[in-house]
Length: 259
Image 1 (cartoon, rainbow, N blue to C red):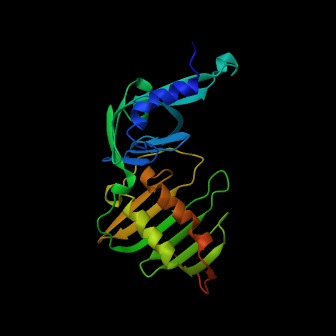
Image 2: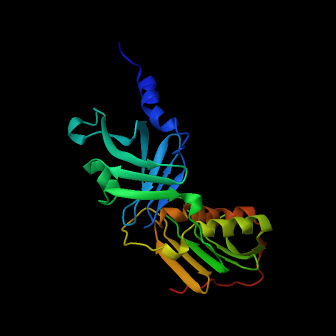
Image 3: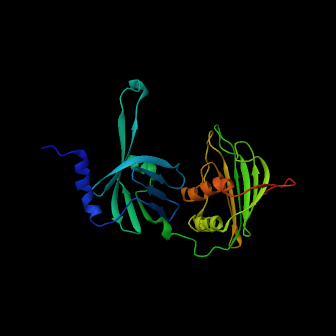
């Protein structure tokens, strides 16, 4: 008797689903490891490796990531599947531990055999004395906006728009209370104390510069791809100019970074 594939997956997944534990959320490790699992795909990153996005399914206690590929020596006519298998050794509401089971999985983890994660929203800055945040984005080979902005603790926004930005030139604005609270909440989840970058060689992506003044210190990052835990922060900064009423400045100004 043949069992339908979808039914087989449902039966195999039963051992975990019976515990009423949802794996579909964002998880972070102690060393900037990041994995986000939704209903269709997995985003995974370890520090020093580029972020990878894979499709997945669950086989009992195994998380199987996979992608499709073709080969030039086959005239791209045959589709192959590459699997990346991880054993789920711990899964609770707050903790997830994955063990790489094959060499493909180890390429995604930077060689780490086992990674322990915690639920993203449990990892937050206990105290945040925010002073100012500065952000710069360059253009890319597409329509990435060129912009510089600054938001201070008084909720004042300075915005310098270049090519593909929502507005070009020099503008100011006031960040509404709700958006400012969102910024603080996102910063608390961005693991500011741990943030760092690694050498990257990327030709077709914008370069982001991020500078945060908080708790009497300054965190400065510059790279095309910042750690995945900053993804919500970068998106917030790229979109804030669309959500704040901007007023054209009477005189030009500059936003200076420490480097």
